[in-house]
Length: 319
Image (tube, rainbow, N blue to C red; front, side):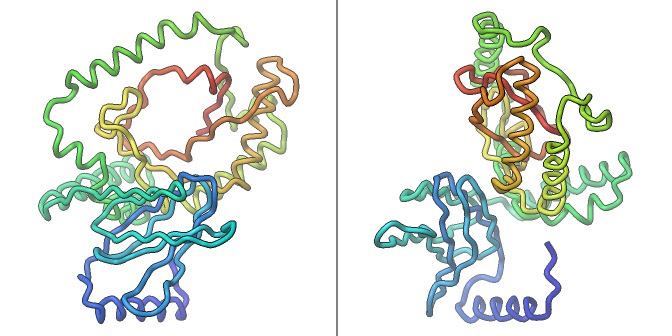
C-alpha cells in the first residue's frame, strides 16, 4: 500500500534519521512475524534509547511482514494478558521469520545470498512477471508486483533450495511421492462415499449453477476485493523441501490470510453448499481448516493427493 500523506512521509524520514544516528547498517531487510497461537500479540520495535514503539498487532494465525535492519530488537507481548504481562524480545540476525506460539518464540534466519545470486534470482522473477504481462495482457504485472514478489524476500526457501539442491528428485522425494501414491490408492476405498462422482465444479460465471445462495456471492465478492487490496502483504509460504504435495523446491508459493470477518461468511456459505450436495442435514458439518489465500506462481505444482480423512471429510477450493 502506498502512503502519500505528508505526515507519514515526515515520520518515515524521522525513522530513517534515528536508524542512521544509532549506527545501524542502512540496508533494509524483511522479517515475517507469524502468530501460530490462539491469542492476539503486540509487536514493538525497541530503539536503542527510549520506550518501545508498537508497530502492529497480530491476530491468531496471522502474519506480519516488517521492514527493518539487522541488529534491531523487537518485543512481543500479549495484547490482552491475564494478569501480569510478560514481554519477550528477539534480535534480528537477518532476513527470516519469527514464529510465535505464546509464550514460545522461535526464529529462522535465511541463508545469505551473494550479490550475484540475488541479482540472478531477481532477474528471473522479473522475467516471470514480464511473461505474464506479454502473454496475458496484464500491463501492470511488473510495476505492481516487482517490489514484493521479486525483491522483498530474495532469500526465501524456494530460492535457496533452487541454488543448493543438486539432485532432484533424489531418493527422499521419490520415497515421499511413492508413499503419497499408496495413500491415494488405498484410502478412498476404505471410506464412505457421500456423492456419486466425488466432486463438482461450479462456476461464478454461471451463477454457481444456482447451488449457492446470494449471501455466499456477496461474501465471495468481499473476499476477492480484500485480496486485491491486500495481496502485496503476502509472504512466502513455509513449505518442506521434500514435501510430497507441495515442496519448497518446486513451488514459489505465497500466502496471505484474510481476517475472520472475511473468512467466516465464505466458509459458512461453502458449508451450506456442501451439506446440500452431500444430502446432509443443515449444520451437520464442522469447519476444521481454512488454507490461504495461497498465491501459486508460474510453474507451481500441486501434486495429486488425498486429504486427511479424520478432519477433511468434505472440502472445497475457491479460485
